[in-house]
Image 1 (cartoon, rainbow, N blue to C red):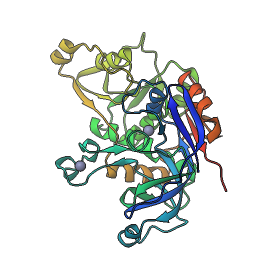
Image 2: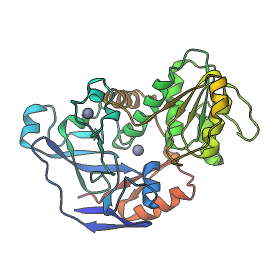
Image 3: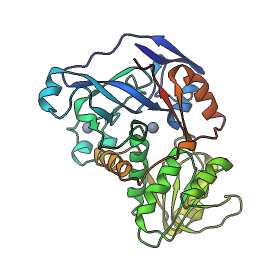
Length: 333
Ligand SMILES: [Zn+2]
Ligand SMILES: [Zn+2]
């Protein structure tokens, strides 16, 4: 099959690789759309220790079931060849304390497609049957490929426990920031603010009802600040712009370490959360939210490109694209 293989920093090529075969508990999915995630851009640049070449990236995808392992047919009879699906790309053990608490994203033996396992930038990908979710009727295959980033947004917003009439700031109007604004929208906040240096993306946030602000002059304060960038200044801004006893959620993973005003965080009793990925309930909620129309990226904010254009798309997103999401489409039969 054709796969987009990351071979060295800035080197990604379509190669012929063996088509994976589903293990007894697995499902083989013919990939329809595979979104490029911000977390993969640092991998493409060679700055992510979890993404080592050679590697097939891609973990935000939808597709059609092409084959099932023999046990998957028995344990998951609702999964059948030809069914449109998406999948939770975070594989967890299901037995450790974290998994039993419902915090599968913290499972010590978690494995993510596109990091430790081959991802969906290919014609086919295999996933355990328990991670596969059939699409609600009417949900398009492109919208379904957003389930993973929507699950990230839902998870980070849940951690912040928004209350009616509170205010929130979302820093970063990339796909996660835009979907976070939509996740906040169901909580009846009195205002949602958004900051981004990219004017096109800030306009997208504004069209979702967020008030655009410039972090160099805006003073807040807000009850909740969510950093969907992960740079030193955006993390510090979130800590500085929440009210005393406000909540900050760190989602973006850009810098490995950042200086923060810790004495101020202590004296103002700021509550800080790290937010990583999602649990299976967040993922299910994401799919339901997409089907209900609570989450979307407008057509003009997205683009579909052939797998062969993958490398150029990664470069474009690194240098600041005018679209929020690019979906790669493997060659179709
Ligand atoms: Zn992602
Ligand atoms: Zn576990």
